[in-house]
Length: 316
Image (cartoon, rainbow, N blue to C red):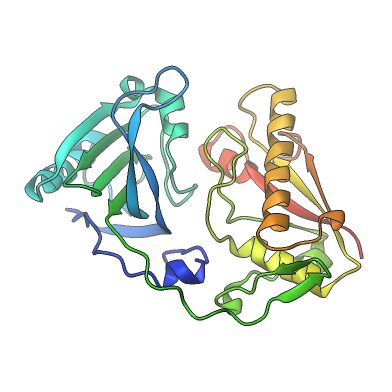
């Protein structure tokens, strides 16, 4: 089943062009995940990772990220990539850049890309290929393929030109969090996670839909259902206090990971306050680094589980 993040109402109502590239697979393929940030900028890679970043140019438009798990008919990542490259060429795309694993920049290149999290998109750091292409102004594709012992994995990021519609009718009045701030109502409350049940029942909850820029503490733009739900719950429970705790995998030293995890938790705190109107005096931010793992850091799946921010109920 494709898991879609909760989108802001304006983005949900936005008319966009058809997907720039819709891949056709020669073997059974199961959609595993999708993100539609809406009108945004995408850095189209034009070379391998160097000097701390991937060189590229910014393409603005309607951005969509989709991933598939593909039955293992191809014996190599090149076998996965080549038919998709041919499809792009047939549809009039110009190849911009293509690389394989070490030539891309290995670990650094992969983690500088904005990919769907495990298990939606699995990347073997020793065996992946990347391709970028463009067709006309405002149309671009970034494509990465990789494999596990049992399946192939493909993520396609597409950008197509898009325009925003006229402003929608105003939303209903917001729920008041305190005299000076308000918490925005979600577009569809039935999609929100049960924050209250988890906090009351377990004392904490992983905010599993959050996305950060790779290797940084910057929370990506977008509407995260977990933050909407947490802000609403705080508004309805004025006695409650929450500490946001950041966690990392074991890549790097402990001190650096504690600092990164704390800054990520603080970025979530600021988003709750600035965007959702949550009361800052009832929110704290801390970092645990890699000291409280959920998964095995020896596997990519485990490391993905360990990179997270949790809401911990402190009082109320």
